[in-house]
Every structure is written in C-alpha cells, then in structure tokens.
Amino acid sequence: MDVIVQSLGFKHSDNLEAYINEKLQKLTPGDRIVRANVTLFQGPDRATPNDYCEILLEVPGPDLFVKESSSEFEQSIDECINKLQGILRKQKDKMVDSHRRAGA
Image (cartoon, rainbow, N blue to C red; front, side, top):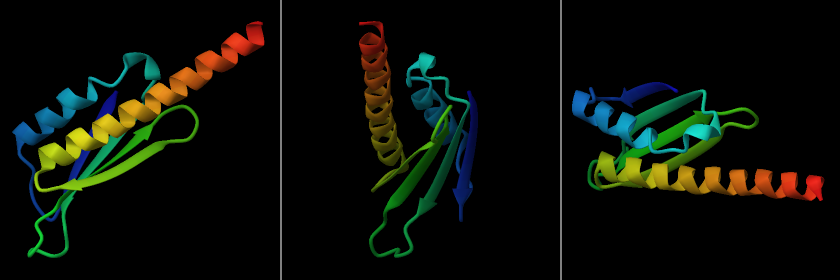
C-alpha cells in the first residue's frame, strides 16, 4: 500500500509518519487498499486546539473517507483507523454474505 502523508501549516515529524504507517498496516491486508492519503491539520481557532486527521483510502470501487479531530494527532489518527476498520469489516461481511446467497 502506498501511503502519502501531508501536513497543512506545519512540518510533521518522522515519528508521527512512522506512527501513521504502523497504524495503517493494521488494516486488513486482504482489503486491496491501493493508496492511503493522510492529511493532518490544526483547527482554525487556536483557542480550541484541535488536531484533525483525514484519511482517504483508495480501494477498488468507491474510495473511503474519514475525518476525525482530537486534542492530539495520535488520537485523531487512532479514531480514523478505528472507523476505517469498521467500514472495511462491514464491506467484507456484505461481500461474504452476497457470495453465500449466490451460491445457495
């Protein structure tokens, strides 16, 4: 899987990029993910410091997009990955279900 990490308005650390790559590897390998576009940015209002993470997964069929915000980038990333795992699991269950019906 190809991973592209962009940070808007700041330079992200190598540690943060490694963290993103590590988390993305936990997504099911059989999901045929072509590319993950990860965008990190901070909220517009510095008085409420929110760190945002957007992940666009390019997969066969419609691409998957999630966006989360939290007080830290790592937490935003974790929430995005958890959402994507749920979406991918539902898609896989749907596919397995349709194969079972077709074979019956």
